[in-house]
Length: 109
Length: 398
Image (cartoon, rainbow over all chains, first blue to last red; front, side, top):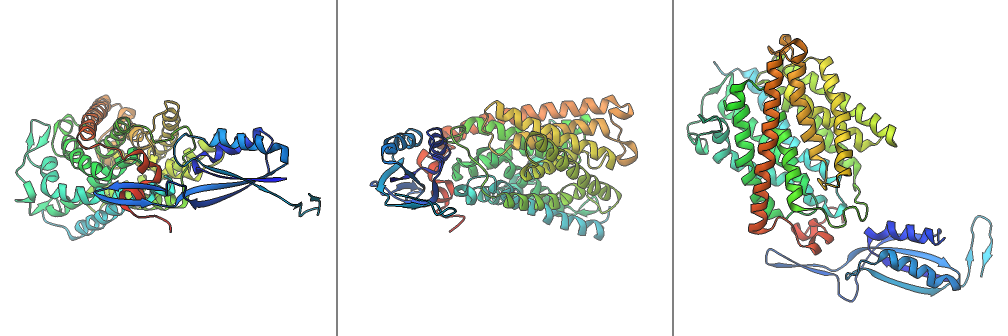
């Protein structure tokens, strides 16, 4: 199993959730987070002074999928989250050792 | 006439109540925008109050209420309020100045909602100054200052034409010039704080008693009637929109308070001329009509962002016409269509049409001019980050 962690624009969340659902990825966790990419946020010029908006609001999605479904999940996220502009976010894939369904105690390796 | 202490006390209170409507409008709208624009939305209302307060003393009052020039505007004889003293009916003239000032301020605050989440603060201040001078002041003169609509016999008790038609249709013109918000219709842009909007509505409903009952300019029977019909119309508007949204989906709280505002808007021009039963019809129909206008606005894909056009514009049109339909001689000395007086209705139609045309056309030109001179809209990145940070360097929530 793998966990696909996506940090995306807040305004693309609904599209990404729809896209994931269409590809049968329903179970997921969503967190509102703040962060910055390599460009270090955004610099705004306002009335002659510079306003640094370093930490931008983002949303983090965590989806656990089977190994052979990683590509499909990444494609589902990318296609719906992309605007083509700086700040579209990033996807990380991390290994998952084990998962337990709390209600039944069922374990998946 | 001699200054009456009872009338003066009521108008002092009314003036303070209408002042509180201005930040009330700010809270009403701030709850409807995204959290990154809440400070900006509230600030636009406060800035409207500050800008208009100065403009009104220097120039606005004399343009609206001093000696008539060709039926169009007042002359400059009271520039800077010089020469304004003594009584106006049974209240001090300076109190009338202050009471009217709060009306002009709340009108500009309503107008700010058309460009929510994307307007440059500096440009809005310049636009607001010009708009109040060139649109609001002449309209106030036409209706209340002895201008051509007053001579025609058009009725507007507390500002249906001057405040609501003008702000609603101007908001639409302004929204057309500034353009749609980034991402409009691409992703959902939902209200971030409904309780804040409801608090704003509560302040508005409360303040509207000063707005309408204060417009009697005395503490007597006319004020009492205005207060009661105002409350009745607000209640029927709230219930009508609530039911409409219920039939559509769920009984929306935001819909209920929007309906209350629609009812308040519609009763405003009629408050001194109709009874409570008519107010029920006026408010209820306003709720349904404005709800329909909002659906129409969405279908037309106009980003007139917080529905000043649907609620104030269309509500104001309905209220102005309703005044000509429901006016009752026994209440305020005028009769409307229902009581066989066609002339009154015709006067209302002329007032409504001319206010729509004047406000929409002049605003369009003004907004274009300000846009060309200094840009009405913030840069894309500033809009993305939100106006709280980009315009004020502040956040609503830590």
